[in-house]
Amino acid sequence: MAFEGPFIAAVVARLENPKENLAAFGIAFALALIVEAPIIMIMSAGIALIKGKESFIKIKKFTYSLNTLITLFIIIILIPQIFNFIAVNIMQLSPEVAVLCRKGTFFMIPWAAAIGYRRLYHAVLIISNKTHKVALGTVIRLSSMTVTALLCAISGKMSGVETGTAALSAGVIMEALASRFMSLKETSDILKTDDKGNTLKYSYIISFYIPLALTSFVSMSIKPTVTFFMGYAENSLESLAVLPVLNSMIFIFSAVGLSYQEVALSLMGKNHHNYIKLRNFMLILVTGVTILSFILMFSPISDFYFKTFSGLTNELTEFISLPAKISFLLPALSVYLSFQRSFLVNEHKTYAISHSTFIELSGIVLILLFSIFIFHIPGAVGAAKAYFGGRIVSNIYLYFKMNKILKKKA
Image (tube, rainbow, N blue to C red):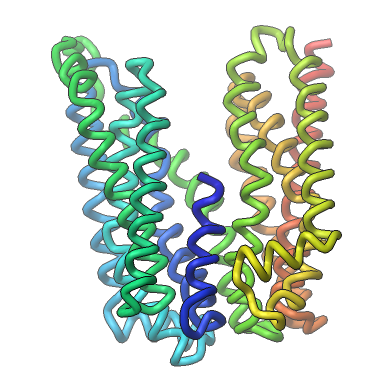
């Protein structure tokens, strides 16, 4: 799934007005992430709380209610007066980019609700040990997205940002429908399971879910926050254009770390008896992604990736070079962060993970304030420094939390 972003950005970059459309696509996607944040953790809640018929029905109703609210929210955002106030007055976007961004965001209306719907049924599949069906859903999503993007691009009737956002939504909608279809038997089995003794109340679902939603919201707000600052930065249009490409490239290398979190959590064991082996394997992953990202970002391969694969112009390829080099350690830090989080979840110290996310966002905002308003450096360069600085302080905070626990266990 890490290749989803680079593929869409590469398509958008090859259509008319690539700079403006890439900028608009990055902003539309950032807005969609904010809207999506409250629903993204519904899979974790479902896995933890669904025990049978009664609990499933309540979680389903809760999911549908939340889906309705976030869909209404994005529709309200798209009201011209409200959207123009956000895009032009607050984000300082040019009228041209603001118009493109609104057109793109329109296609993202069903996106967040479709994600909530499919994550509910992903929870059902995971509870039923049918994780291979989740993987199959991903294949359907990527295939649908690819076909939609190519058809829209070939037709020539849609702008780059409309092509990109329509493809993203089409992929998620098809995955949601596929997940529902593939989970018919598993859903039926759950509905046959009597859990009337499990008195799950909506008040408990809300109290259980709010901390998860807040953590997700803060984490999802990082990229939109950076996007917001770009409107005030030097070379704002160029920065907004290259950020989707830069973020997607970093995510490709970071994806290994995201997967490692669940691996380390499941294998850590009681009293961390596998800690040393998991730590050593984490160091191997860190070394591997660091070497690969260094080669890509500091060699001529970077020109091939940005210019030939991503379709950036010579101007944007040159502009993205420095931010990419600043970012080359981010994948390694992401792998380390996943290992830290798995350790703390295993210890039931999830509050520390929430705190680290707030610290990371605070560090990013502080660095952006200095970079943009005091030192007046180009926006994409400031963004790369902010991502790197924010992740470092998050890693350091969790390092001390882990170290404290390990000393007590020793």
